[in-house]
Image 1: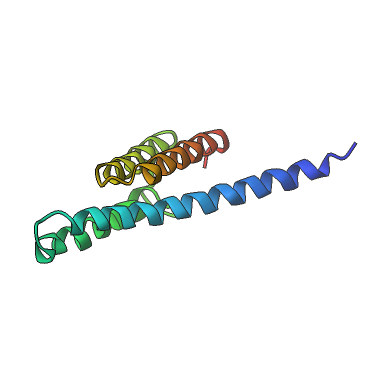
Image 2 (image 1 turned 90 degrees about the vertical axis):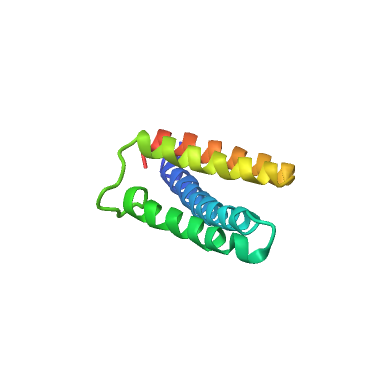
Amino acid sequence: MRQSGNSGDIQGLKALQYLLAFLLEIALLLTYGYAGFHFGREFLDGLPFGIGLPLLLAVGWGIWMAPRARKRLRSPWRQVVALLLFLSAAGLLYQAHHTNLAVTFAGCAVLYTILSLIWKN
């Protein structure tokens, strides 16, 4: 029996989870920026939201959600907040008529949350 392979498999899955988390976080910022820029009728109407919303999210994430944050939320609250933010971004994509992207984003968010709760990270 080969038992040492299990540790490598788990480490590989954790690495994929970290990659998924990073991609979800980038997609979250891009989605809120996209939604912010489409807030008003003209480009300048959405400019404060297109820059401000992602900036606000990035600062908040750095304070409460990032792995090395000083005031990091504890599990499971961190996963709940992350899931709500990711699902809100999926909702914004759905409202913008990007249904397939919204469903994919939501599915990836749920998968990430499940893995994050299992591994408590």
